[in-house]
Image (cartoon, rainbow, N blue to C red):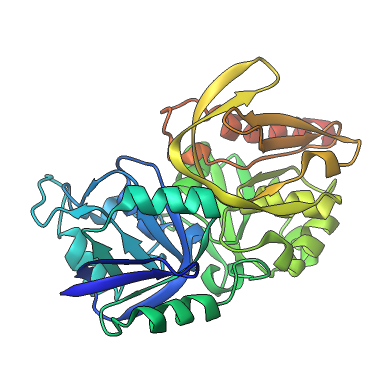
Length: 366
């Protein structure tokens, strides 16, 4: 079936439909990963976005339920150069196309994704529409222009859990630490990393008050990844501001941005963001370079950080701030995703640092 992708700048791409039929709108972005489309599709940080994969061949290893980052796909739409209808993997249970169709996600293939990616790099991320039902170019461009901008959107409230839960609920009792994790769109592998290190993790909704968290008396607080504009998550900024200095805090992605805003820094929308699994990030403390996974369209202005904070990581492609910490309080965060393991283990030490931070605070308070 014929499908069209129309951008707010007036560009229209004609291709073929795969996945669900219908129409969808969102901010069109690109991801440079060669593999990992399951993780991309189910990452809540992609809520509200139409994701374009720059690698030309997608779907060849199918879909399996073990590699999901959440319970369902979160993207607004999916764009690939060539969709593989035939898949081969011993863990696969269905094709990529069937997975999208079953979850009502509209996809388009057989378009020039290289041209689309260059357009996004030159003009910036912009809104777009994919449709199999409306094939009128002018109509689709009008819809893309009318769709709300990502700036100012609080999408964490859409993807967050509705009620608190423990991860996982399997009867284990020999935990070393109690961690409260704010769910702004948390990825499952983050929870696995904490669990593997002896953390009894309670995941709470994004709007959980600081008082409620302190009543739970955790050893540490984790701030998760998530979608949308961090400045729009005002309740999160207020709550984290009240928690700074009270408990050890570790943040990733949106959690990093919210922590920065709570500290008094500023964020800004990037031209086309970082999305991929091969970004080189420099760790300033020892001058080493980590191969890292990224998914962010906003960033923290390093010049706005208060004097009692210091930058710990920078992206070597464009010098974007990728991590900071407080100089004296038990608090640090990174913009990239250490749980995604593209290095594969370059950034695992961050979870170990969080554990040590909680251990040190325990020793101090005895």
